[in-house]
Length: 163
Length: 124
Image 1: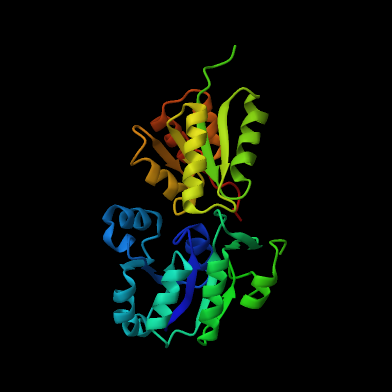
Image 2: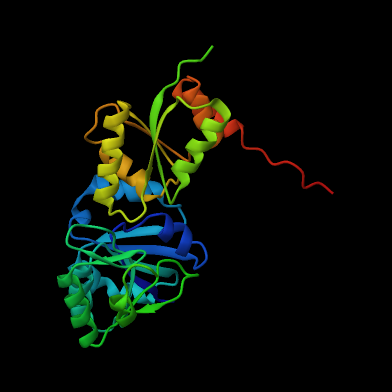
């Protein structure tokens, strides 16, 4: 088995992830990559409290995730790796070139961002960073739940939020 | 005669909160103190801010949320660290809200809501 999905989602672990992806894909473990949460025990407890016991969560920094990647890939369970922002996923994939595809699952309204899809709002800097990730050879797509269509980054960036 | 009706914030996915509050109004009439918050389009910080404002508006320290692992529940749990006395009840249902609005003690409200889950039919 392998890491089924690398997801960028500012809500990290939440309903869509646990129920929407977790149940149909039989996710056995989440790798939550966030330098701040990796150091915040109370916040880790919060995510554990809301997640069913059959889904384990690893809280790691970018550095730790890179170091432990082979172990995640070799895990017999299905895994999902999550970052809360583009910058973290960019750092992770730059340090771990074996990762090939990244999925934007949810980036919501914030000052300076423009709506591109129902669940994707991006600032010009974030768009430039995503383009740079694609230029580096990564595939970047958007998909919030498994039943939704997979949308390429080109289509995302052409969008105005109506789709 | 009207019972004492208490206020609270209800937060959830999509139009869940708005919908369940409209169901309370249908059963008990208007005049309840429930305020809806949706997580739609909002970042975690945005959800926290909306819930905080709604709590301030109602003067309540009770928050009902829809899903245990949902973003509204996580936002509520984070807020509970900074708002003294804030109580977050997740897994809200219509019987739960009705019992709360009618003035039931919170422990009793939860107990009744749990007891109200039944499986009917299915035999044969």
